[in-house]
Each structure stands twice: as C-alpha cells, then as structure tokens.
Length: 439
Ligand code: GLC
Image 1 (cartoon, protein in one colour):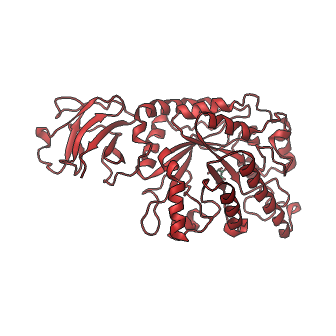
Image 2 (cartoon, protein in one colour):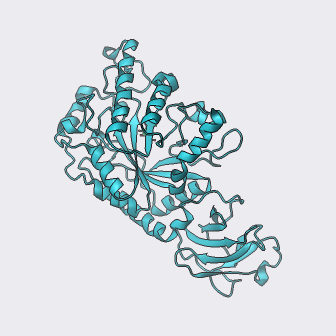
Image 3 (cartoon, helix red, strand yellow):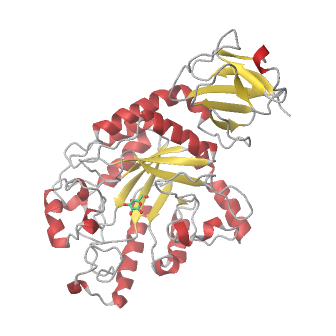
C-alpha cells in the first residue's frame, strides 16, 4: 500500500506545494488572559478559574472578511484556524458540547464565519483541531505530562473513561467534516508519550475523514513527530502518517526527505512574535524582511510557510502583525513568481542568498551585496537572459575583465559598467529572474 499511498499523497498535495504560503490563526478564550494559549498549563488554571473568560468572551470586532483580505494581500493562499485548542473551547457550534462560542455572549459560529469569508476571497481553508482537551471530563488529567491539573489529585480519572473522550473527539471531527462544506486541510495537534497513533484510534479516524472528504490533506501529528519520529519520514507511511510534515518554530536545515531521499511535503509553522495565541506583552516581532527571507528559505528547500497571527479578545489581528503582513504583501506582489509553484533549484546555495526555481526559470534571491559582478557558480553558458523580477528591467549578464579567471561561472550585474558595485535594489530580497537555456 505504501507506494500508492505516496502517489495519492503527491496528488492530494499538488495545490499545497504550489501555494507555499498560508496563515495560521490561533484564537480562543486565551486571548483574554493574553498570555499565550498555554496559559492554563503554565499557571495550572482549573476549569472553574478559567470559566470567567468563557463568561465574558465577546469579540465584537471579529471581522473575518478583514482577516481574509489581510491574508490575501500578504500573498497567503490558504489559512488554518483553531476550531478547538488544548483548552477545549470550540469556536464552532458543536452539538456535542456546551463549551462553544455560540453559548458565549458573542453567540456566533466563529468557524463558519471564518470559512465563508476566506473562501470568498478565494483562499483555501483548513481547521486546526487539538487532540488534547483540558476541559473534557474524560481526558487524562492528574498524572498527565501537560494537563493544567496534572498535580491535583482531585483530578484522578478512571482511564476507562478515555473512550468517551475518543468518541467525542471523533464525533467533533465528523461534525467539522460534514457540516462546514469542503475543507482543504485538517490540522491535528498533537501526539505525546503514549497518546499517539492508535491511542487516538487514528486508523478509524483517518478512514472516516477520507470517506467524507477524500481530497483533504492532513498534517502528521496523529503520530509522534520530532525526536520519536513518525512514519511520514519513512518510505512505508501508515494511513495516519498524514500528507505533510509540520516542523514547528524551525526551518529544517536541509528540507525533509524520506529514507530513499525523496522530498516529503512539509510546512514550517512559525509565529510572528514568540507566541501562537495573543500575548499582549510579547513584542518580539520578526521584521517583514525576516519573514520574506524565511519564506524564500522554505521554498528553496521544497517547503511551505504557515505564518501565525494571534487575534486579540476583541477579534482583531494585532496592528504589529498587520503591518508586517502588509509589507510582505508589497514584496510578494512584485516577486511572487519566485515563490508560487517554485521549489529547490538543484544547485549549491550561493554566497549572496538563495535560489528558488520553476522549470527553466531560476530565481536568484540576493540578501547580501556583492563587490563587483555577481557570481553564478557553475552556470557559464547556461544563462539565456536575466531580468529584475520586480519590474522586468534588464540585468546584464557578462564576464567583465575582473571575472575573467572564473570560466565555469556566469556573472551578472545591475548596471554598466558590470565590473563595478551597485547597491541592491531591494535590501530585503532582490530577486533576479534568470532564464536558463534548456538542456
Ligand atoms: C503546539 C502547541 C501549540 C500550537 C502548535 C502549533 O504543539 O501546543 O499551542 O498550537 O503547536 O504548531
């Protein structure tokens, strides 16, 4: 089965690998304490003490159309929203719990509104669903590694009752898949310790998912990832190994391949500051320049970037995040051809930056200024012509007198004379589109 599974995966992930850039949205009750989405874990907050946030939750400025417009303008092609995070609060009108947004002051099905708005902007849509649940009475609590009540003996639970939670979790996934139209991504989070794979009844879950929405793509967190591995990294993946790997807060040093060296679809999920959920005091935002370069880095290694925003309790994406997204969008509007549908170039990483590639279009992403003509290692005789991607202006390909020793390489420069040095037109990332002579 493994070969055909990989073929199906390749088929299912085509759009995903084409689209390259998505928005992750972490939003829930934790936006009120505003100390990140793990606040219950970090501060060992009980259900009772967390209830105050449920009672007051009323994001009056939630305008998913504005979110969708911001994502689209940033060049993002898909978005994934937390339908339920570890705190168990559901942003959708589940029939299986009262712990949901429709029972708060807001009274709205936030998931449905998100899906409608993003689809309307032509973006693909996904839902994040936490396998952990710190609110459900049958989820392991006392003695668990992570649960907020892990040290509270009053939360000793009969392990037999876990089956109720599993039924609940499967039931909610089914609700999302049957009641909300076509979903493009199902993003589960996460496995740990014994709670992985069949402990979640993962084969049954995946069979249900595929029987309802066969095209949907699923991340790899029904299995343990990280140090413990997961079968997506092998050439014999299980049914629940998922369609893409999901490195978190790191870009894999050399992309992700299976045992046979074939590229595996992957998506790095990265925060804009250092928190997923809204964190009022966390102002450690990455610059637009960093985001642009990291997106390029992912694509140059055949990966995607899922960039997170954490809307506040009123329903707004933080101003700092919007400003970064806007600037990224300005760059991408003129340079998107070097991102969408592109991947690894099959060339050594250049000194001045990175390459991405699509067929005979090679994109040189210049991060660092060179002295004199700019060197393309080993590409002598391979370059048809070169243009600045942002405006189509001619870039001069030649071998000026000071590059005469390097006969294997090609050289270009932005102006004449080509032996001189010129500042980079865009210091964040100047993209030169190099048309290669077909081999
Ligand atoms: C994690 C965290 C989490 C976040 C997620 C994103 O494993 O538990 O809060 O949602 O990763 O990848």
